[in-house]
Length: 205
Image (cartoon, rainbow, N blue to C red; front, side, top):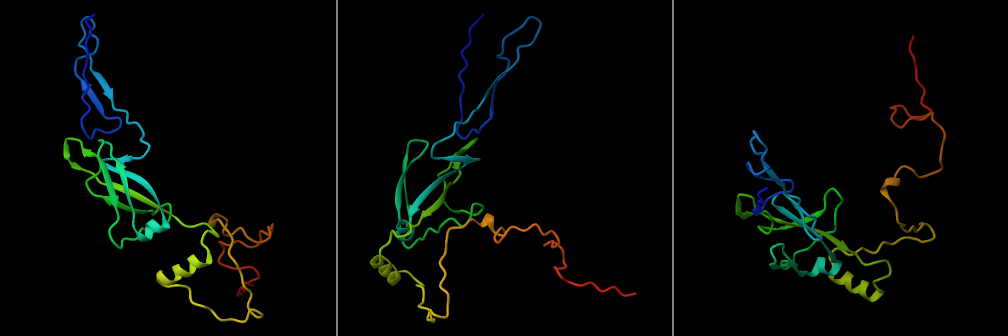
């Protein structure tokens, strides 16, 4: 058999599972037309970047200090370049609002090249997470200074401690909302029913 060497050119911007076809390059059989040789692109996962189309996404965790006062860090891009991502003066990065609505910004034109038009690039999305100080990490002096510089400090509330009960917060999971109180086996009350327990129905004859 004649040995053939096929050189596969992976073009910029090609996607996962995209097919590269060599027409008529499969093994030949008597009285049959040679078939095609297909190469399927398999995209490896990257430690830093996630890809969707021509866009890339990275996750960056900032300290509260960086989120409020500014940040700068170096990212080594997929093509070997190093880019410095730097906040603008006065820019504030907010904590993640929820898993369905994270706080995201973009670096324009720093995504993947578009297949067939490599000079048009996607965007680099940065998903931010902000680390707050742990309980007890800030001393009284630091807290006092922060109250001076941060907007909208808590106002002093006056009340009689003999008359008002002071309550403190504990860790919780919103998934447990509605599960508090004693367990009950009473099925007489259905929360989906329009009529509450103990209501009397009147029937007219």
